[in-house]
Image 1 (cartoon, rainbow, N blue to C red):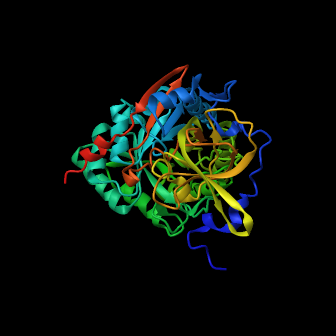
Image 2 (image 1 turned 135 degrees about the horizontal axis):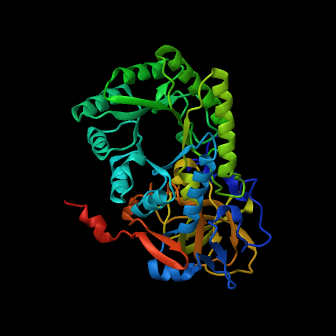
Image 3 (image 1 turned 90 degrees about the horizontal axis):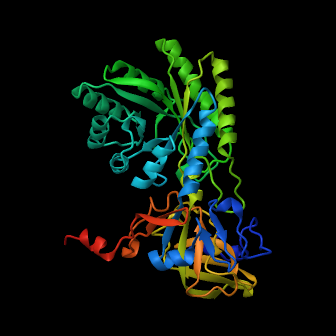
Length: 469
């Protein structure tokens, strides 16, 4: 059958919504697993976060608006630190800054005792501006520039994750010129297919990251590092993807990485002290998602590592993990104002209701990029109208500019209403763009009845300041 020319999202068969989406008994009810702990409705049905009304926030700070529950963010960071700190003699947690990073959030992470993973010079600059201890920073990336490596060395970052033979030579030369010895991990490619979107699965063979274990490339990278007097090999690194809900994939990854670690011991008489199994722990974007709490993840990964190390006769290395989405994601929702509502006739007498908001793919590209699912709710009032299956779309000149593909919203939703989309703390602001010359939204932190901007809204003057023509 010929594909719909505008894409699968526009095919007629989808007008009834996905099979997992159920019509709610109460369209005003909040599904608790999707929202930060400080989010609730007041007696008028208005959404409140940290004690503050979203109507008041929208009036003062405008929309679209990313709203972060700071207490929720901190509690999730703390939960990971405590859970992994209680296994294997104490494991390290590196917050993955790519999920969302600002000076404020870097300071929250430092306060809560986590380390920080960065993967560009810009992320490193934010961390250093925040005063984050450099020894607790790790630098990732498959193509780190000379200037990025120099800055990392000069700042004294705690470890660099090596991703290519060119990078091994590059870092060794730069470190030798500074008469320092850089602590490094070798990123391996373990050949595990994480059950996630192909663009965020990062351990199969045909992709850009890491050294292949199966081909012998990873073992050769280890030999190259050990030959360099200006590099110190701390351990191996593996990352199998993102939005992963259990530890099954980590079991295969750990087995293959630890087998390589055993081979290194046998060949070089060296037992590596560290093992980083990456992050990718999933969150709930809709009611179909069922993520595991940090304590369950930590216990499961500890059991896997202890079992595999025993099998290879290895001492248990110090474990590191890299959660980002699972800390930042649920702590934030995006607040929009409705601009237009229209019903579009479909084949067979059906119709689809489109609710257009004042943001879209410039502040959340994930639906268009990953076919991601989101939920949403009417945030500015209660409604007694029956629920109607709706599609929330943005204001951009793309038919794929969809924020929420399918959700039941009140039948009386209208221009001027506020809509809130939960789970937007990770990979939304960090991947935001100025498409259609749309200024990027502000990021607002709310805590204990107080709101403060941690990233201001861009203005047209900001956009024009870059245009030197």
